Image (tube, rainbow, N blue to C red):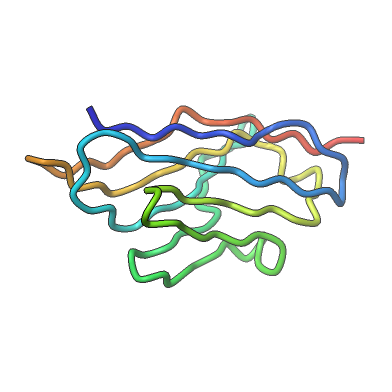
Length: 119
């Protein structure tokens, strides 16, 4: 079974930093695009950042210059380095990946990790 497991959320003060990790496990042939989304209470899920298998990145305007997405293909892992965090960054963060397993392609989601920015 192919799955994504996230880690790294928590409580941080405004201006602080956190790094989220998302590791894919199972029988994996190829991982295509990977991305981070977030959903704040009462709001729709939104794309935060994405990265292709070749390393091209895309960011939401609200996080440009503060967040960095990168991946370690050898570890089947994507990271989100979040700096200069603001209270409005508070949300549940979800990892997403397009994964080719042994027989089929999956559009996978992680379980979500809470990020709270508060003093």
